[in-house]
Image (tube, rainbow, N blue to C red; front, side, top):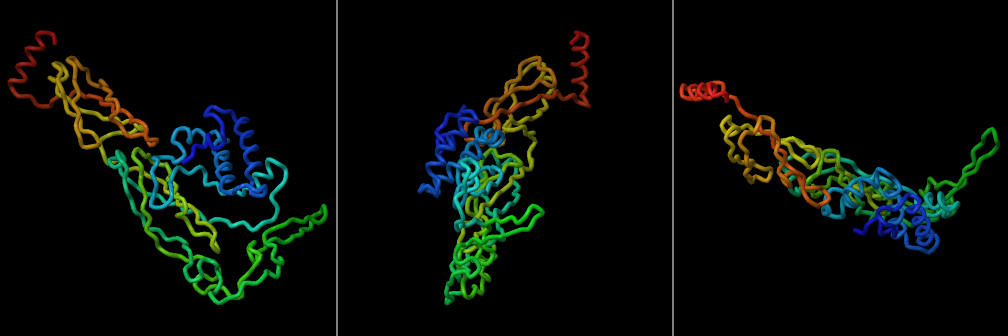
Length: 350
């Protein structure tokens, strides 16, 4: 995916004013009503929407455009939700340049769907493939998403005369107030079928269960959200589908404590190991074990850091660390020989 900074043509340390100036220039050049490409304009507006917000920009700098991981779901990419923005590019253009794009038939995408999916800490050490079954609105095959009966003729909307917009006047104490709104009869299409589709009742979409497969990226944490584009509800009358937002919840099924990408673990050692030193094996989340050297005279509570033995970073670069705290175990029962040895040590002042 193209980098947001590259889309706007600014450096990663660009100021808000520089980002805004770059967006104004590109938006003016690529706006659809100026003969530009709408997909390009959408990319520019999306980049500005993220980089103009301190929080969204911080998240983007940390996780990248695709959010946790850079893979893709079954169909379409996924990433962190940046607030679920579904905005009218005409409104943004009007905000910056003082005029709108005028009435036009605009297809609104389908609604986003939000679900919560649980995984386990022992699983997030690597990518995990999951499949969920959700009930959603899908494209109506009987009418091909048009909302009209197969044999029905399409006629010009009598309410708006094919314009898709109507004038609405509202009386106030200051006088009459007029505004242009979307025609409710044709929903901005400018035309209506003589007869609606019997399967979807004119919606162009029907309810159906669908299995969706996706990848939970390694290192993901609770509260992070994956976005699978185009896997939400289908849009009405052939409009694009919304997105599927998957909020992740990570259950801890291990003896490790997690703090970000770092792991913390407490390991008991014998009194003799603490005094004389030695080596102990530490089992990692991967199932493999590493050897940890215990120096002689190690006190209880001493913490050792194993670099790069924590969780993967969702950005795909590097791993966190594993911190091992040793706890000297004091035996409750001793054999006669152990007692004699300790009595001797006691006499020696140890």
